[in-house]
Image 1 (cartoon, rainbow, N blue to C red):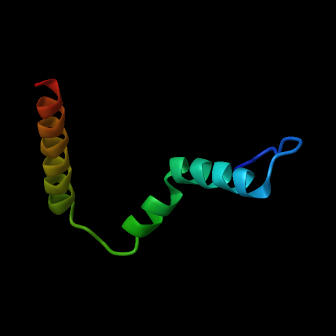
Image 2 (image 1 turned 180 degrees about the vertical axis):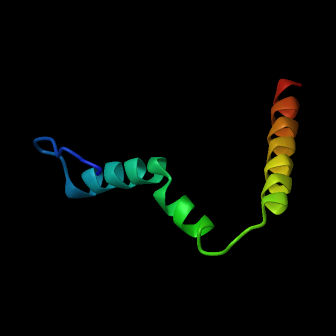
Length: 64
């Protein structure tokens, strides 16, 4: 359960923004979307390797 304490003189928009940020960090929506369809383990591993290679390439480009 996500709890967002609204401070004195804080706008509702600001509190809502903090709530959305906390909700996004939990990964609930991401997991829900991933569970909408079945993905074979071999396909999941392949995607994970592709993501790792992409991130590694991005990190290597930043060092130069």
